Amino acid sequence: MDSNEPFVVYPRTINHIAVSVSNLEEAIKWYQDILGFTLIKQPIEFVADDSLTGMAVKDFHGPNLKKMKIAWLTSANQVGFEIIEYLDPKAERRADSFEYWKSGITHISVTDPDIEGLCKRISDSGGKQRSKIWEIVPDKHYKVAFCEDPFGNIIEIYDHSYEQLILSL
Image (cartoon, rainbow, N blue to C red; front, top):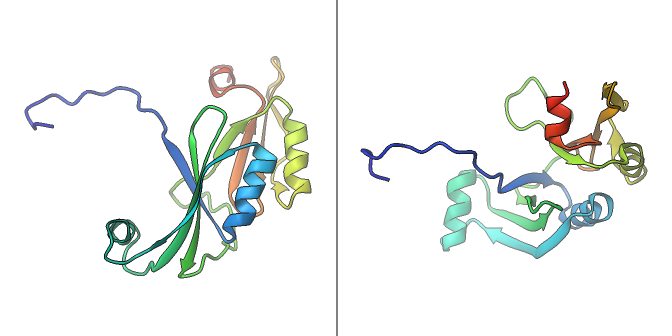
């Protein structure tokens, strides 16, 4: 873009979200079985070497990363969902999965009209329900809850669309 051209501001599309886990194969299965995400590309291992992808991995992650695996899934509305397992250095689960006082991404969110059922499936499959189910908009019975996958990633659940719920607050 020429620096003399005006910058056009418009709503960008969210392309994808990425989470890291300590076991990629288990995470793929969990996100397919519990949230219904679709695996669109089998896992690939990336080595931080002198190849094009290796140099890109080093550039983004810094000099300490040696090797990682990544899988690509998609949600019902085609938002990409990448799952990454860092192999060298080895991925470690955080002691506190929800360090909300530190800046950065805090959670992903999905919509399911059966919020109670999804919270139970998450809990029954190695994850956990972090909050009770809140009827956040009582006159419309809109609900929200926070859960956690088995790998420590936070998942918020709405029982109605984002716009419906937020515009009703």
